[in-house]
Image (cartoon, rainbow, N blue to C red):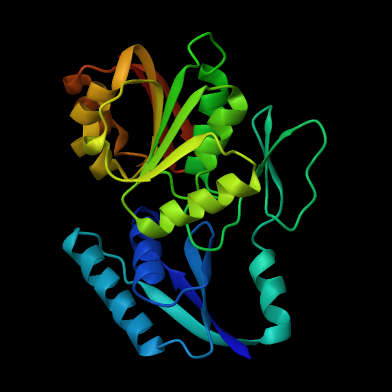
Length: 281
């Protein structure tokens, strides 16, 4: 059996949209995110015409956003014996902050660290991307207090932030996502980490009734702006919110939306071309 490998060059702000379309519409086996591109893998019998169609749709979305960027891609065939190695090369263990090490299931845990075992096959957030790393660093920093009762991972993806919250000592951890594939991946990763205490649901924040001491949201900036009133509604007075997925230059709009909703800035945390915000109610 052979596999299709597609190297796609795309603006970083469209990564999540592309990954979601490839994994829900096409028969994508998994993706590797790099600095300015995404590598996607497909089985031999995949309908590559539909893959090209999805890439055309993404290009149209880029043009409608006003960006002058021509999405480009290269197709190649890799033999069966090389596929696992090609897939695994992008997922080596990585230390994040003072406490965490993110490892794929095929690696041994690292002594003296909180190991987050993440199967990257079909969701978003492996710890290698700047936005996920920033969330973990900021969660570690701001969770070092007595308010560890409840945590909400908004847009959970692989579930990595919810698993990290449980390891940080939060007693009640909720993880939600509107994408059923992400919910499935989060549940699988929770099992890998023996994190049975996480409540993982396919829903939006509008479906929730509880308030939380800590919320982490690694979502694109336009969605964060829209969700600002709901985020404020669901964080307890004095509670902390970590916002990530924000490209440099978009942070002022996100912060303005959060301030209007009643959240005040504690920290602006840059990592490369990305900015994360820590706000407090």
